[in-house]
Length: 250
Image (cartoon, rainbow, N blue to C red; front, side):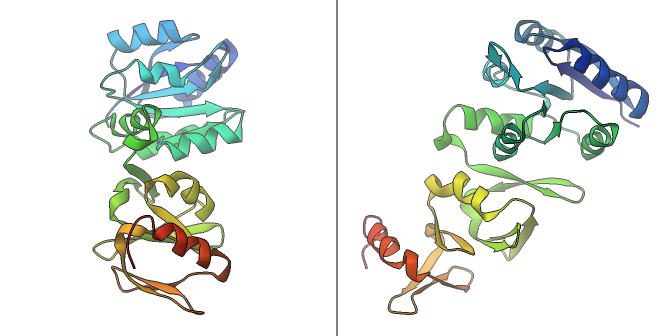
């Protein structure tokens, strides 16, 4: 079994000790290479000691741990955020973090994350996506979709539309590929609205690049590249067509 090298960054030494103990005593094939309680020591260790996973607290006054990622040119490890705040966790997921852990730390959560990476050969892909987002939303072109055996990297240009399924969402891509994810449609709307996506109905977010036909009138709808006919809600209709005129002629 491959040994996974991990590191921990948290400004509270008690949290470092708890997490290190769980990793070393309850996670098979895991070695804690180093720990740090401030960003300066963490940056030095990253340069000197290779790791596969970095467990990192987000809020470390007077700094935020995102500052650490901005100093790393080519990350070769994945980041798992450890935080006491749900809103930080949601932001981490939106920025393509592998996973997040809510304090108080539980061994089951740690093992869940470790198992996701157990078969991974190349580390750093997800951390690179996070860095791109931090460097500017215009550079953010991919999202992470979690699946049963890990995750897939999805280019947002290949997304045709996203459909709400209660608290879940169904992503439809070119090539008749689809995913069901636990993210809500509202999450995707917030993440993709400046990427050419438009929520034309309470249940649908579409990629404007993949529209094939617009049907106007009382029962307005759009035909997407995969042949799906999606209704435009009455509440959205006038605004949608007005904004479209700034993009295409019809």
